[in-house]
Length: 315
Picture (cartoon, rainbow, N blue to C red):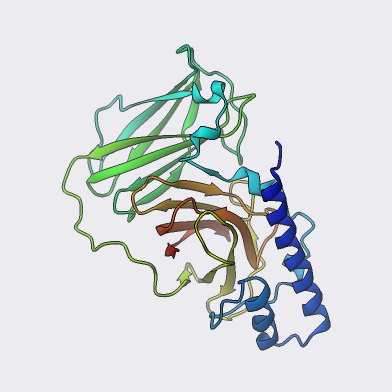
């Protein structure tokens, strides 16, 4: 896969900052205040008064920091970058057991074909799966990341359950052999009234606690159409100590799904330091437009996957 110069430039800047940061930690006072001060300047692009930044010597020296991760991320809205062959790939979505209703499981089938209507039979493994299916409600309250089984002849199937009615968007990520990773989307209306929710607003704090883990989300210079670093930092809720026992989730330290408030922009990114076990998961991301976005970080610890959601405003 070819790396574009803007991607490489961003990667070089991030790696350079990481190297300076790690060197500074080795030569400076190891106290939390010293770490936070340097982290604010280097990692967070000057952002002040953040809750914490864990000691990251081991993580930042990770030899597996991966420049290809930048090109693995993709936006659903960027179909214009697809080749002619890739644009011809279609997904036919169907519910063989009838349309879904809240609280009941329904089988979803996805038949993938090429421009001639012929079934696409071969797919490459993509983060330990042949197809990733992300299901998100219109109000962005409901989120599922599931993996249909391949039945052969271009057909995938999975049982899906919805807890509440309303409108949902489904995103399928897959790699037909010989082509790039593709995303195809489909809307579905689940019978029953949707819950009434207040308009989506940016989170007051980018720190959350899930499953005994305190997670902080940080960005570099956050601006639409500009690539920025996005870092999840992990501490144990009880001890306050940095966590370095994260386990692989789908082949890496974590995954991040991002959508805008209208479900028009879909972003799925993978970490630079994919082989890390914490206390950081470092991503690169470009937001195509300004506005409100919801971010779901997915990670695994002690055999259990936990999901950390944040709502952010991108200027």
